[in-house]
Image (tube, rainbow, N blue to C red; front, top):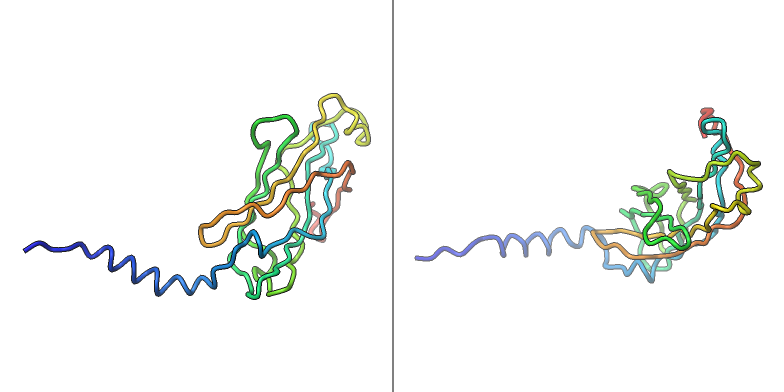
Length: 170
């Protein structure tokens, strides 16, 4: 007698019982729109006595689907003009209260590059510096293992001021 593996039956059970718990199948490309964007170069203070400016983007996600969305993760990848690969990327594991209601918007999401520009010159000279390259932030959403591009933001030529939080940390 030949025994059949039990794996296909177990896999089918998992797909049919746990799949619906993840929520309805929503096409994130169609459902999510990047809105209310503020971008530029965040004044991250001094680093080794020099001005340090990092690419920064703040945005909200608008959910145009008929279902609330939970369990979203974002990756924001920063690309400098003329370069073959990403300069830096950041994973955002949760968005505000982690639920974007149908037809609603997320809390604001701010994502800053971990690398940036160091200047001896005044901050305002960044955009005229010979080594400066424009940066584009590419935003990807992930839910239930599916990763899709949902937007791109070309960073504006503006310095975003250094802001201290209530705890005294930026």
